[in-house]
Every structure is written in C-alpha cells, then in structure tokens.
Length: 351
Image (cartoon, rainbow, N blue to C red; front, side, top):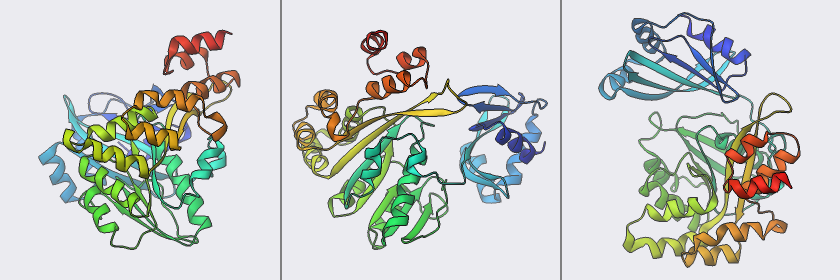
C-alpha cells in the first residue's frame, strides 16, 4: 500500500481526514461526510508496515506498549498531517487529519470582526472552544499570524502536535511540540514563563495543572490563548471552575473573572451554497457584567447578557446560526439540529 498515494488522492478531494483501518478499505471525510476511497481492503500486516515506515523505532516501542500513539507526518511537496495510530479488533488503524500549510488571514475565515480586535489585547486569557474539528486551530493560527505581522514581541506556542508552522515576521516566534520538545503542556508552560514571552499559545487546557498555570500566566501580564472542548461560553466557564476542588472554586472564580478576556465558541456547518464549511461563532467578551456573573457563580445568566450586548460585538450561537441560514449558507435542518435552543430557533427561522 502506498500511503502517500492515498493521501494525495484524499487531498485532491479536499478531504479533512483519512482513515486507514485494518480489515476495511481506506475512507476519507469530505465536508463532514465519510466517503469510501477506490482502494482494496487493508490487511493487518500492511498496516504494521505503514506504521513502521512513518515513525521512529522509539515511537513503535511506545505504540506496542500503550497501543495508542499521536504524532505528525509530513509528505514533501504535499502537506502535513496530525496522526493517531491505535489498535482495534482487526489490527492497527491510522487516523490522519490534514493540516493546511498556508495560514489563512482572519478576514478569509468568515469570522466576526470582533475576533480581529482580540489580537490587540495586551494581556489576559482568550479561549477558542468547540468540538474536535470545529476549526479552533485555524482560528488561533490566524490570530497568532496577525500578531506576528504587527508586533515586535516574543511568541511561544505549545502544541500537540505542531500543526501550522510559522516563520518569525516582526515577532520572535518559537514552536514546541508535546513529546518531542516538552514532556507535558504543564511542563512547557511552567518553563515558558522563564523564557521572556509576551504571548503564549497553549494547545489545550486539558488538566488542572495546565489550567492553573495558564490563568497565572494571564494574571501576571501575558496574553495567553488556549482551547477547550466546550460548545459555548457558559459551559466553558463552568468547565474551568469544575476542574478545581470545591474548596478552591471561590478563589478561581475571582481569578478567572479578572483574567478572562473572551470566549469564542465555534460550530462548523456544511455549506449548501458552495462546497466547503462555514463556522457559526458565539462570542462572549468579559465586560463588567460578565465579570460579576463569573465572580458570583451566576453563569446561567451569561446567555442573556450575550443576547443583550450585540452592540459590543457579542453574539450567541443561535444568532450566528440564524445569520448563516438567512444568508443562504446552511440548511434549515442543520441549523436547528445544532442550535442551543432548537425550538426557539425553529420559530425564528419560520417567522
């Protein structure tokens, strides 16, 4: 089996993901739809040879021990991929996500104008959230590149794995990859604070230690950007607070209320007006009202504040979805299916 040939065929179809599963033919995901590829069924011994051909001996040993392995793979002249190798019933499987090589400008991503304003923040915590594959990495890369081209600062990114690769423009920009360059996000972030950074990108706030360090970095004057797998602003705030033991939650509410600057939550939709995807974006900006809500544990009020603060640049997920629908970009069925309040949105779309 020629892995690079399969990846090239998938790239020609604009596939976001390729799945190679022992016992089945290759599959690709094109605009969220799983699509079979015109190749024969993959045999277990083929998949073992493919894995051994694209990773180091140390990584093979790790895979044999843990039965899971995350890494990146690059095809010269074609592109880079974020890869997970794992075992399943019939043998080894590979899931490869295509990483776009060109960092798109913010203006080309169908994002609200307020996202560009966030790149002018001098300090604080900015979170981009959403499901896996919702475009968080692309949004953050575009934000980092905008700052790279504007400022003369020091940017450090901590990633798992490195996706977009940056060239230092006006900024000094360093990228560190989990496993290859650092032992954990928490370790990388702890040491980054002693490397004179102005801006820090943390690939994911996936545990309490990383979250605490990210908030502390924002509190001490750095601009910190990171992600969470949450679908809206109120859930994001609750997820962070719930990471802490009960006895520390009042303290973290106070810290978060002063350091958090914005939560941007993304949901991707298949377009019906042309091939491709388009994001619906919820934006919460930390105004004094939002800070009081976080401090006083009234996160259930966040959606109402977002709805009544549109003139400041905030907007709810359902408002963003309705805008995409009325602009003819997405179907009514998809709009209602992914809404925060489906019944309410359905009435709005029917009006």
